[in-house]
Length: 163
Image 1 (cartoon, rainbow, N blue to C red):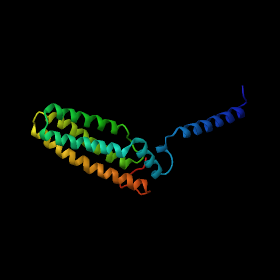
Image 2: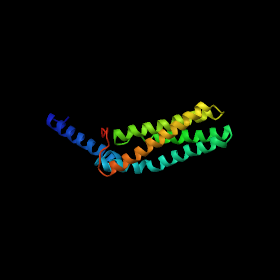
Image 3: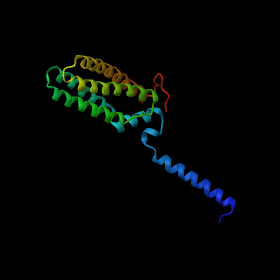
Image 4: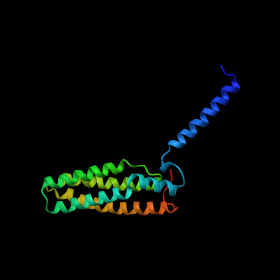
């Protein structure tokens, strides 16, 4: 058995080694400046592509809803729902304010998917809600893209806690 001083030295060395190992395991969006972390997060998650995919999905639903069969509308609503859920899995972001903006945007897209699915049979109230949620998604997604640009260039976003 090691003397007390030896055990302390081993314990301190073990803690230092553990901290080094855990630091090395941190993802690129968990280290560096906020600008570096947001840039790494956006790159590793394909943020711009995700927003583009959801935008295209929601536009396709709007086009199909005008002339498509209920089955075709529901199929596109299901794709919108799936793509939105996939994007939501990439949260949180390194910045609390950006995360809140994206939670709002993805929530609107998810609600739009639910309402368009329910409205595919011709319920005008559901499709009216879909249209409002579509517009709210676009507003929030534009805000999120602006926040990413601001954060990547070293700026701060109003309401950001910077987790």
